[in-house]
Every structure is written in C-alpha cells, then in structure tokens.
Amino acid sequence: MEIKRDDYLNKLIRRQGNGMIKIVTGIRRCGKSYLLFNLFHDYLVRQGVDEAHLIEVALDNRLYKELRDPDRMLHYIMERITDQKMYYIILDEVQMMDEFEDVLNSLLHIRNADVYVTGSNSRFLSSDVITEFRGRGDEIRVYPLSFREYTSVYDGTVDEAWDDYFLYGGLPLILTRETEEEKAGYLSALFDKVYLSDIIERHRIRNGEELDELVDILASAAGALTSPMKLSRTFRSAKGKTITDKTLKRYMDYLQDAFLIRRAVRYDIKGRKYINSPAKYYFEDVGLRNARLNFRQVEENHIMENIIFNEMRIRGYQLDVGVVEVYGKAQGSKTIKKQLEVDFVANQGSRRYYLQSAYEMSRTEKEEQEKRPLLHIDDSFKKIVLVKDRMKPRRDGQGIVTMGIREFLLDPNSLES
Image (cartoon, rainbow, N blue to C red; front, top):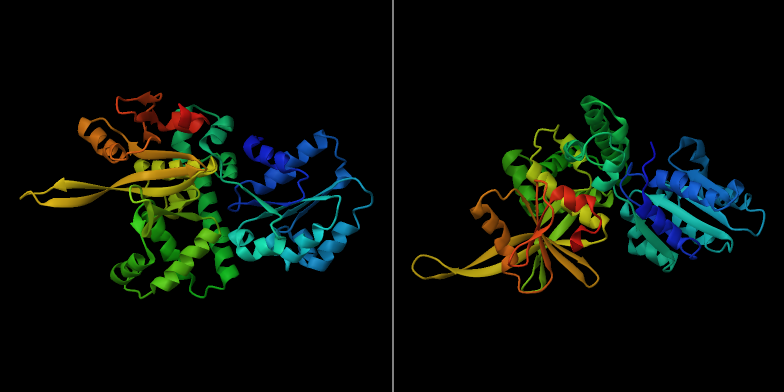
C-alpha cells in the first residue's frame, strides 16, 4: 500500500538543488523516512538520476551505527562521490550522529551535493542550529496523515474512515493493523517504548513516573486551558505530590520538542495582544492521545477540535485561541465584562480565518451560543463554524459559513468555499 503524500513530495521537488540543507522534521513514525527513501527516491530515479548518485543512510538502523561517528560519516560520503554529477545525500534521524551540525556544514562545501536530512525533535529548529547553518537550512515539516490522505487508501466509506480516524489517528502504519486490538497495541507501545523512552533518555530524566503522570493529565485535558502552575496544583491536590511549576514546564517543553504536543496561546482579538497564560495543548496525533488514556475518554467534540487544529497546521497556518471581550448588564444595571472564546484564529501571511468547532447545533440556543463570539469580531476576515454532521458550506445572513467536518477536511480549498 502506497500512500501518496504529494504535498510534501512537491515541497521537496521545489527545493531541489537550492543550495540549502533540506531539513525534514516531524514526530517519529509520521512518514518522514518513507517520504525520502521511497517517494522522493522513486521520483529522482524516474527523472534519470543514477542509483549510484543516491547516498542514503538511516542512522536509527543499527547496521549504520558506526556512521554515527561524524568523521566516519564524512569519509563514507566522500568516497562515494566519484564524478562531477549531482549526488543526493539523504540522512535519516541525523540527530543520532555526534556533531551533526558540523557534518552538515561540511556537506555544504561539496558543490555537487544536494543534502536532505530528517529529525524527530525540534533541536533542528533551535537558534544554535540556525547559526551553524548560517541561514542555509530549509525546514519541511511533516505531520501524521491528514484525513484526506487517510481516506485516499482507506478500504471503506468516508463515515467509516472518520470513525477510525478520530479513534486511532493518522500515523501511517495504523492502516496496516487490521483489528482494534492490533491498532490499540501499536499506539500504546509506540507511546511508551519509543516516544517517552526517547525523551527520558535524551534528557536524562530520573523520575519517569512524573513525566508519565503529566502526559496522562495533558491527554485527559487536551484542548482545555492550563498552565504549569495549575498543573502543579493538580499534582498536589489529586495525587499528593509536590512538583514545581518549573519542573512541569521543562517536561512540557520536552514533549513539544519531540512533537508530541503543541501549545496554542490566547490572543485578544480586539486588543491585538497575546495572553500567554493559561494556554491550550493539543496532541500531534489524536490516536496517540486516545491510546494514552486506554480509549476511555473518547469525546468526539474534543477530538474534533484537536483534528481541526492539526489540519490547519498541516495547511501551513499558525493558530491561536481567540478571546473576545464583550460588555453586558448584570442585575442592578451594573456593567460587567465577559470573555468569549473563538476556538482558533488561523494566520498565514495576510490571510486570517476564525474557526469555531461546534460539534452540533441542533437547537437555536446552541447555534446562537457558538456564533456569538464570531459576531463580536468587527473585521472582514472569514468566520467558519464546523459541525459533526455532513453539510456542504452554507453562509448565513451575517456572513458566517457553516460546514461539516468531513467536507472541511476532504476539500483542500474548503476555507474558500
């Protein structure tokens, strides 16, 4: 089964031969290696590139353990470059190599080398790496399968695909597991034996139990406002443990560094300013989130919000949680100030969209509640409400568009509908 990931492949093709190191990042098992070693490899061969001009090394493969030594890696590459034609150097999980920044800078001096590397933590995006590459690193971010990619190879109806997707997520190998037991087991083992073990080893965490419990709390409260200080109080009251907010913030940074979770801060739409705390945290893959909770808290409304968040990031948008301040009258004619929430403020250059995840709006009161924050935004950017039921885009008299979540996810141009 081949999953065509044309959006990412085209990004690689557009950057081909641009003199920069193409840095492919993303959570482990999201398909980075497949993208480079299969899809991009096959594209290059179809374009007439000789196999001898493809130098490919997977550093997480024990067969290449000796090449984690930077000098051996450089020697290995240099002895394979034997003519003046272009060579394509593809290094997988390059963060496993010592002094990898120095090696990559050395490769930039080879005039007939086009370099592509993958990594599973944001170490690639740090200021240190940017300085080392002297502005010659070009990031391509890869995510788990979008719902559109998932349905392109799913054997069943769109509705059946949705049921599986919101439960088991979009890591590509989940599509090779046939039974519910196999899917759940794959995700649980991946979380414990790959992601958390990698974080504990990389950051030399002595108390893995604290990290475990933090992940459980974040999974249970995905999409809810929280902060390290609030979490510290939760540990003290619910678990009888004292963990400082500084320690919890450090652990949360580790989880973001490994691309497991993503933070969305609040943005005051009218005041045009950020409110950094509390913030919301979403999981890179909802299947991993569900597996972490043993599939006990599978509330479709919260998971739908997480899927919308991930989809907009896949489309290249930066997301904040919108806050709209409104004034009203309380009893006794006293004026009070309220904060209404817009689930997402999505920005990409000059583009902006306001999105509300409503799940269902079967009652008039519910519809008014969901649309109220959007009606208090006095700019002309598009406002969209997404619901669970199948529904083609429909614009009301106030300019707000309502559409079904499946229609939104399956149409790459749905924001313009």
